[in-house]
Length: 273
Ligand SMILES: Nc1ncnc2c1ncn2[C@@H]1O[C@H](COP(=O)(O)OP(=O)(O)O)[C@@H](O)[C@H]1O
Ligand SMILES: [Mg+2]
Image (cartoon, rainbow, N blue to C red):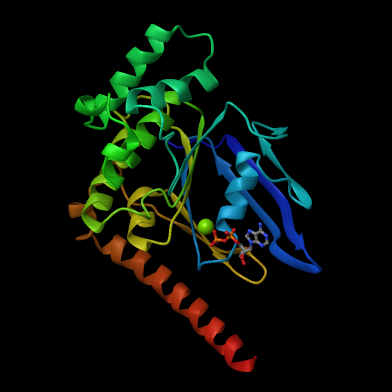
């Protein structure tokens, strides 16, 4: 269950991109607290700063103002407490599926022996239904299979925090549903294990509702937090049950109307220009 320990504190973050005489404010005064074991999705139109925010959490970018605390401590660069899954280029093309995972584990747990790492790799490949693909290279796997390996790697690394930026954005609709269910199942676990804290960026409203405890909606120009929508649907969840529930429709309608408001504002703004 989610408890009230603060895991990630984003405090008044702003970020400007500067280049060849232009200054662009990608994020303005973003504040957000994410609890230990919470699954939070970030949604919002393209260009509202979702990936920028995630790269700050990852430690790849430093905000122009504000700070991020993890477990109460200001982050300085990347850390072994954070694993990432992105839409593309997630796997090393010159390593087999098994080696990709083993290499990921080595980054965060260098104390493990090679044998232990390979054992863990295979355990997680089996969790994502890919035991048979351990010796395959990414080029020999479908996009969906590659993302399953990337998820297996992120989970095998066993970091407290998982940062996911549109991880299912590049796979077909059917595979996407399968991967969502897989992630949900692995994250919810058996109900006894400690849950990871997940920050999940997506365009897909249904995906966000299915997975999240809370949805953060951002808006662009400048990128900022616009609304927080709690998702108080019972867990464990299944898509087939969810879509029948009245609470699901209520949350979905709320987000849809916020989204349409956002799109309408953008059209109005462009009409003025
Ligand atoms: N390296 C960069 N230099 C200049 N502008 C950038 C850079 N990266 C992103 N941007 C701009 O910042 C805004 C936010 O980008 P991004 O965080 O990728 O948005 P999102 O992930 O929500 O689509 C966009 O307008 C984008 O064009
Ligand atoms: Mg993005």
